[in-house]
Image (cartoon, rainbow, N blue to C red):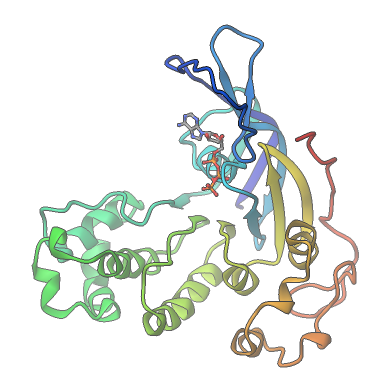
Length: 294
Ligand SMILES: Nc1ncnc2c1ncn2[C@@H]1O[C@H](COP(=O)(O)OP(=O)(O)OP(=O)(O)O)[C@@H](O)[C@H]1O
């Protein structure tokens, strides 16, 4: 049984070394969590009163502007942060994939980094050794795998990291965007592996600014705004509110075909009560929180 149960959770960051500086013109901040000013020390209120319940099979997209709290929520779900107030209970083994470069050593070889990165994601050395050939083939890095990682370009590193990440079987997959650096043909290959990975995972929580990836991997979404949940419901509906237009207006025909829908008009309109596989449903998870005051 895998589950996520977050209740009235807050995460605050007190900033002890904030500088005060007078500005000729007051600059109005548009991004980031709210900065509280009640105490002597400024406090960034990165998450405020967040509620989230997920169970096996749920695929949640996290959307919102820069600094809205998406990564903080992912870190809360991964046990990296504790809530300052409220609770966050996660049942199941979490595979956090925030920064594809984390857990990699620039001085050791690609092969060794595959193993180390796998250990970081909870696999044993023996399990990683079994997967090594398959991962090496997927990355197409050839002889570079014997070279130190510092000789790799950004895209080559992402290939390596993606190869490892998509070879595991996570109960709860926590994914932060960072896939932009690979070239288009590799992304096509990686997309299929990512989709398989998501199918094998119990729960997916995916923070991304890419509508296309979200449409392919998720079926519900939560819109974060200044640390608060602004809206939580079906993916298309939430993306439409967040972007101010239907996400299907922008996706390429190729993506529509991959989603099994050559004609966007065939797809459910927001509020139709239709899931990603086109099955009519009762209204299950949609819950809208009031917009934050900023
Ligand atoms: N370690 C930290 N110390 C202090 N403040 C932090 C820390 N991490 C995040 N914050 C603040 O918390 C707020 C939420 O940041 P977070 O990284 O969760 O946003 P995000 O939605 O993931 O943004 P982005 O889309 O830019 O990645 C921001 O105001 C940020 O400045």
